[in-house]
Image 1 (cartoon, rainbow, N blue to C red):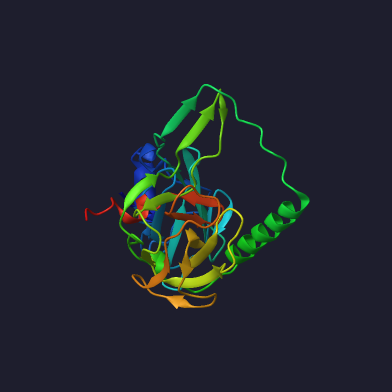
Image 2 (cartoon, one colour):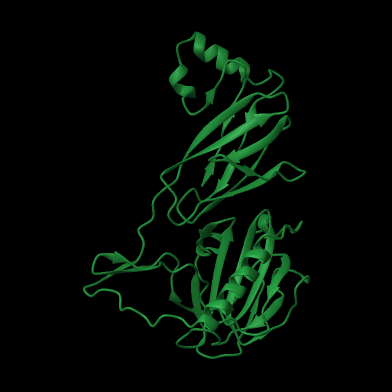
Length: 295
């Protein structure tokens, strides 16, 4: 999906004079927002404007800052930027632009809904055993490590790439799938599960990045957990590994072997759980790779 957002001051004035203001309704500007006549403002977005999706674009010269729904969006030195939309993102978002001279503009974005795989179960959630104080303390420490890893900001460039599949196999769990227990929603599946039928299958980096977490001692739920920062707030996590082939701080390249599939942590069998996040938004890896290639 490609969406070009462009406007020039001369075109805007001509449109207003001709009574064609509705054609510019996508932009909201104050009286001082007109773009210089030197050239058009062009924020071309290419990607998947949908729940769990993403978009890349280019900020033209003169743009000092971008924000999505009020939160800052980083701009690379060449003007490139990345946006993404949570699994439960609302149908509309707002991309705001601030120029170096203080002028501002805002563009509403339409975020397409997804038809998630929902299973309705006619029983309620079974109450579980309360975790022990020891387990709760351990889990708090694990979550703190994950949070700290995601706070690291590396100048990695993988976010610019077309992602590849870390491994080929059967998709045993899809992003966004969810069970509804007697009307009460359970947690949705936050990534893709890829099964190859055995432990020990090597998997590779889907894009360039820097290793920000490599848990050689298995976490209670995730098992051996590997996390890679692809830059611009985009990161991948790989769960339940039997082995990790890289360590924190390593720079990895797309296609490089980084670990092996396993069944560590809370699982029912060997598989690779691959999840992607941009900031706090959970994203669908399938929208970064396209369909699984046939083997």
